[in-house]
Image (cartoon, rainbow, N blue to C red; front, top):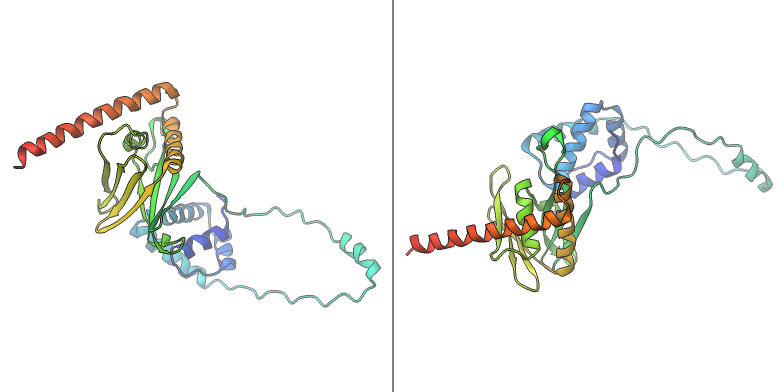
Length: 279
């Protein structure tokens, strides 16, 4: 397991956590065994997405405290300016042997496809993600995660206090139907998170989708235009295709049409029942 100490530092800064410094983070990763490296990576990924648990906070806090005590050697003093003739500079440089040591770390790269949606008062990020539960045969299942952050200034958003909502496998077809305009009523999905207080509502307003992401009393709303809907839908369809490779595009669309019809009928019956019960 290899990942960049710069990426670790970036995640800590994004979440407002004090960083022990790049050099100490690098040493901490180098000296960790494979199990601790893997756990550190997984905890930071959840921290980056805003889906971390209380145990993650406690474990990461102890790691950062230990990292702060790692001694760091001061930088070596700069060598004195060369006093040899200028015509010997090329020869001296050429005489330096090329390092054959392999780089241990690579720069952080985007791990999964994502798309940003910006509004005046808030922003969304849609990113492909992996479900924690595997499918048949231990196959890793794909999904998308939606993150919402309120604006704190012009083109500036409070990602440190974002709301993250990971769609379950059974919710992906309904999400696709909502993005495709197949549903007759707003789509509401919820009861997510440790406190079961996270919800997403997607309402089709014709020229745009009105998306609300809620956690408890907090609500972040963003209008989503045509091009952003298309980009979001592309990620959802990629996840659906990865989870059901035996279904081709035509069968997948036919299945979504059936799902939409059933959902529309369910909501219609529920609405009628509520009208009959509530005077």
